[in-house]
Amino acid sequence: MKKFLYVVFFSLVSVLVSTSCSRDKSYADYVHDENELIDKYIKRHKIKVVSTRPENIQGEWLDENGDTIYYKTPSGLLYHQISLGDTTAPETKVSSRAYVRYDGYNLWDDLVYSTSEKYSASPQSFLIQNKPASTSTYGAGFQEAVRYLRKGGKCSAIISFKIGNGENSTITNKILSDKDQYTPMMYEIRLVNVE
Image (cartoon, rainbow, N blue to C red):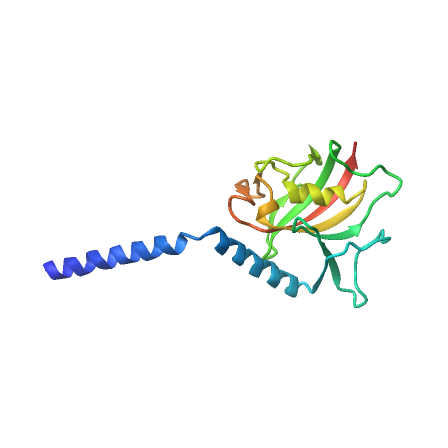
């Protein structure tokens, strides 16, 4: 009986140790996992990534085959313009107040956040900042994407957790942080207005 108890005890200890060790990921592990996830998303959605921003296109960025073009910015943001918006409207810049509607998806295409009319009576508003705080609901990547738009414009943006958002309420009323949970996200953003 004593031998049996030792075997059970050591089996439990080894299970607990192996389980806790598998949860201890390094930052490099999270970055590696994120890069793999983004690469799979890009392949699944037939996205062409370019390092130079397409110019003189007010509509959607598509290549000659009709595949979606995403511009990879120096910060790592992957940005796709669906429509620029009103080209006679002022540019969105630091200290502007932006009014947005957006849907946020994880890279498995599940809707996580939404401020669409279905979930929110009014557009969300925030001040565009030069360097948003890491706890900001609208992080550096989100704000960078909005700065490319004019009033009425729409885009998609794949945002790594490094430039992701702080805490945000999900559509199931849970609080989720892109940064703290090492979660890359894809946002569809519409700039309703800018002041």
